[in-house]
Image (cartoon, rainbow, N blue to C red; front, side):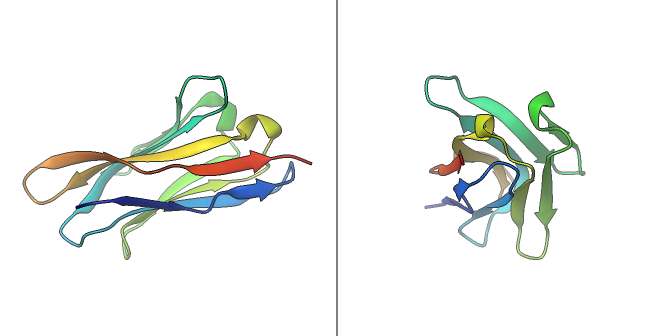
Length: 119
């Protein structure tokens, strides 16, 4: 059973930083693409950032210049570095990944990690 393991959420004050990580358990899979989503209370889930095989990266406008998505090929982990956090960034952040087993792509969701930005 493959699982996406997320970590790095927490409570921070405005202006501070957090780094989220997303990794797949199970050595037979490699990450093809990762999409970070977030869902704030009472709001729809939104795509925040993604990184795809080949290096294509994009962000939603509200986080451009503050968030950075990256991939560490050595341990096949994707990171979302979140700087200058604002209260409106408060949400549950979900990792969604396309995993490659050498012949097929599979899509998985992580369990979500809470990010709270508050003074």
